[in-house]
Image (cartoon, rainbow, N blue to C red):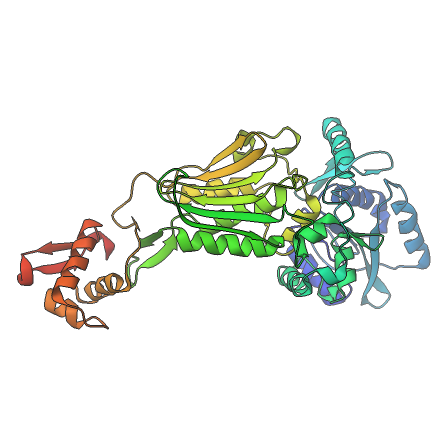
Length: 473
């Protein structure tokens, strides 16, 4: 859990306490534990943000404490010991007569970390705060040098608020609130929202804002580009469909997913108790979306001629983006627990707030898990030259209850008829169809279904009887 919103009411405090302590939430009985609380806030700054609540027992009992101006002054003095200086929010919430909960929230400092408190760096591991190991601290110092000169956090090339898709920005806020990752009070002021998202500096839009929300990124940002292709066969010799588009990242994600779902073969199965086949794309939708999100978030946008591309072949699906893996990661690292090292943390953070990223650093492992659970081989992560790709491979074995073919509406209806009637002659199948069809047409459909292993039969010609495969019922 990564808590970023600060509570302002007793009800919001109760809701946070109900979640329990974790990666982004810590309880302290009183400000007598101020030093330990500041260490935890330091860990939150070095991670993904979080909140410390004073006046909460470790087991989650809300009891509050007496709070005076001196109390708030002591907290403010303690926060001055962060290096580099950190922005934290402090809120007092009345919970009883003369009793208050004090909430201190720190946003993620991914672009500035590592932070120290009183000269020492801290990190959060689950619900525990600990001193950060020296090698990690030194690595973060190197990464901080990179982060201050990233492409995404440079001022945009002449874009202002009128050039952004305001509806998409407000949609992001709505989805972030629904996901519990933005406070209800976020509001609808576009400039304020962009400041919350760290997409402006001194009133100027950053390149990340253009990538995420620009209505029209051409001609200044040609890299906001998506290429989609469905090839005939297993190479790029012949197109069946070929599309290219420019736009902000969320439009590209939507268009890319629509293309994949249109062209992927359907994997169907029959479940007990249901007369209709359950149809799903060949590969898990969540795995495909995660791969597309990763490509959009982690690509190297400084390559002006670069793009994200998705290609469907007869034997595989590939999603590619320009740019190498950052900070020494290897393709093999992506299949096991590894450090979260986003190339574009501002862009990634907005995807996270919107609910499109569940847990930083776990996306590639989730892709592998989803594909394996669906019966496919592990996807291949490939680094070639200055590009990175994910290659999805279908299972070489197609079980009888799982087909990878498109069926016509009539063929699906024939399966429904057989599911209802069990063994049936041609006449009964014909009578069960919504739209009349010639016997010869129905027989051709049945022959196709038999070839796919969905239907069995006995007899010949008009005297034949057909039934759904026993293992499909």
